[in-house]
Image (cartoon, rainbow, N blue to C red; front, side, top):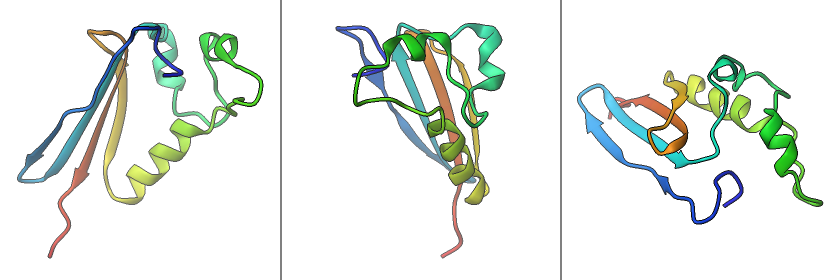
Length: 100
């Protein structure tokens, strides 16, 4: 895992509801500073911790969450970030049910 300390963990439960489906991704430490949460979906934004974890050949450009947000919005969904009770980051993704 690149974004959680060993022996970290990631949990991704999914639940169906009448309006659609909800995914919740939570990981263990390290997380992000609370004051950075509102910037996570900005293109090219990378937290200081993400810069320190960078390894040769695995450089990220700070585009992943901006792309994820664009995909979710294209499906009329919603994605939000918050602090995880596991010590890392929590992503809530809600997608509407499509008509058959």
